[in-house]
Amino acid sequence: MEKALQKIKSSQFKLCYQYREYHFTQAELTPTGPAKPLVDISKIYNSQNVLGLILSFYISFATSARKTAFILRSVFNINVSHQTVLNYAEAAAYYCHRFNLKHKGPVDSRQAGDEAYIKVAGKDNFAFFFISPQRHKITAYHVAESRETLPAVIAMNEATRTALPGQKFTLITDGNPSYPAGIHFLNQLRGSKDFIKHRKVIGLQNLDSESQLFRPFKQLIERLNRTYKHHVRPACGFNSFNGAVALTTLFSTHYNFLRPHMALDYQVPTPMSELEAISTIQGKWAKIISLAA
Image (cartoon, rainbow, N blue to C red; front, side, top):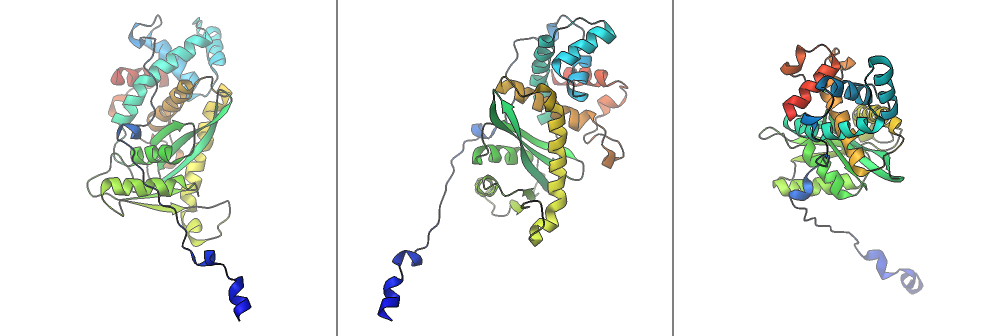
């Protein structure tokens, strides 16, 4: 008996846990937006229709900057360089970011979130997204250099920013530990233990009841990630962080306000009366810029 007790180590009876307390400021919770452009979009040499054509091909039709410039020269006899395409896109993104935040509108109580890998200057970066299942609307986007807690908090805080009074949320994500840690912080910030509840979908197979129940939400955000990857693939990676933020911002504008969705009977996720009477996509882009500027 004594020999058996001697084999038992005292460490077996210790309770080990980690306690983390985050002190993020409100300024740190602001989602990334494009830097103020060097190009004044109201004083560009080309017309607003040309700007709309550039955004139509470069963003909505997911062509590269070089191919966009080639199409404009070959089809429309508009002589612009691929660098002009990039400059105009970054300038437009600055205004579209403000437009996206202002016109996001109410959001669903259940939202799905995930992050997509992108390359910036040869290094892995991450684009965080959250989406509302009912309207298929992007409710948050944020580009970061890591998958740690702060980027997750920024994305989740933006996803719930336009909550109605008394509205509570259930966020569905994968097993990234940054999400539950961030939800703990946001619940403390709001002074409510159940303002945000978390549900996890683990792996590719339903090995637990929670994954089985919430798998459709995970599939929804994965489809969004694939659509995003389709739009950023022509860039073949980004030379600058601001370029990645600009393209992510413009993609979100296109997805929410311009892209018809089959699940919505080919309506856009966020309809706007100002855009309904405009028949061309370049015209819609030009109108969005004018509303945001």
